[in-house]
Length: 212
Image (tube, rainbow, N blue to C red; front, side, top):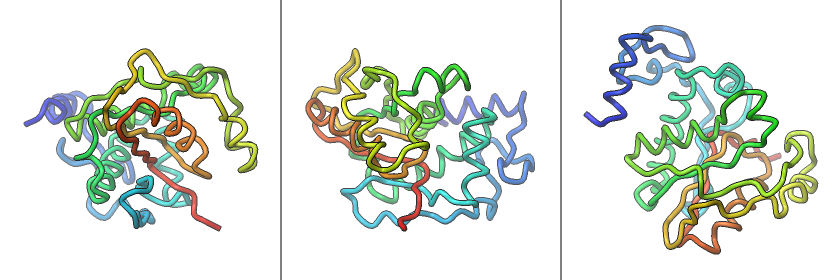
């Protein structure tokens, strides 16, 4: 039993593990009931592209809302497991040395008190037996909220917004995790900054908006 599994097992004695979709009590080794995760899973058709778990739509939005707005630990663990499995299917995790996440804006941290991408990345790292670091990448300035902007404005909003943190990933293969990918501007800009230091950069998000 891994340390991550042991922690989940011990925690379940205090807070019984529940399926985030139906709220049924499940075993410590489960993340959701069989058949409950009825999401539109994303087809990752190239091992060189970003990896995604599911399509961002009415099926995935309730789970994401629980993760982002309600700090639901069951939902966060389920989302991490689902994205972890997508990364395994896409043959990414075995190539990765270290995992990080998109840095959160200060306004979002003040509002929620935590970063969903960071919690997602930490759990995926624990599931995969990989290292997680929050000090690889940081914001050089505060940006506007992306969801309010057009595709062109998103790219401009993030231009030069990320810089290398206190622990550069020199020579390492890095995986960057985000929660939702719309145009790819956030992950692309973060990857661009890291590529000057890392050996290789992989990107992933739990959900991806459908292409119109």
